[in-house]
Image (cartoon, rainbow, N blue to C red; front, side, top):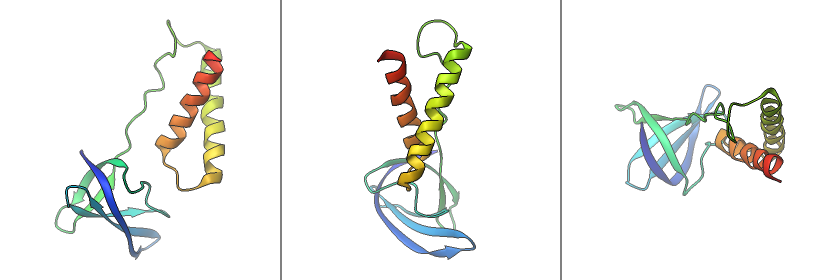
Length: 121
């Protein structure tokens, strides 16, 4: 896995039902990323990616795994806390679905903000 900062995004046609995006990173490297709809990052975003075909310059975004099993306060997570977390992620998903062009990390960040508000006031 590599990291890079998006400097420029240029749509580059379609491949089957996927959008091809030529993405230039701050270090000058350029890769083609395939996506359903718009590219899932914006100019200025730090991305994690993996080169899938060096010959053709293809890469894919790597989603970081979020560990939701850790308790947000001391001790183990009880059933009530699990229900609250599920409710927060559902609310965040529905809210972000209306905006469009958001990443899973945006959904998770909003869910964590809701969870913190519910737990801490």
